[in-house]
Amino acid sequence: MLLLGLGSNLSSSFGDRFSNIDLAISYLELYKIKLIKKSSFYETLSYPNKTDPKFINIMIEVSTYLPLTDLASVLIFIEEKLERRRNKKNDPRTCDIDIIDYNNKIIEFKYKNLNFIVPHKELIYRNFVLYPLREIAPEWKHPKTKESINSLINKLPKDDKNSILKINKS
Image (cartoon, rainbow, N blue to C red; front, side, top):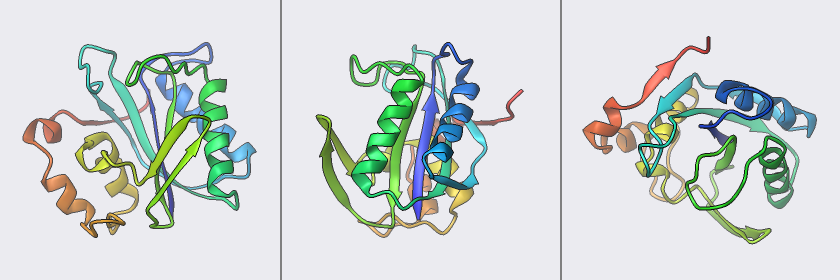
């Protein structure tokens, strides 16, 4: 199972946050990364600076024959094509694509001076990852801890459970 988390909290010259995510998925498909499932859109406060624009996030399941480093290359290229700028960590961005699960493996690698950890080491604390993930993969278990998605969501602070909103794209 290959799971990608996509998010946006800034408009780009291509459109709003929703358009950025939809366009990112279209670009993935151009690179032979086939969409299998897509969650609803979820809106959350920015992390860690809650005064930044709100994020829209989704989770997708995809399939590809690309090796992991090639996949990372494509994801970074798509983020940049959608006008992502890497200034400071956690800055607002037009597009963010994270590898959430790669065939239930635990992997660390470096690509273009970026460190990748799969699954993302902070995902267990992120409502914007866990809720859309549960929607498309309700039986998912963390590759390292073997905890179920429901167990991870139950451990979230009450504020995190109450501050995520499933929304319809207008």
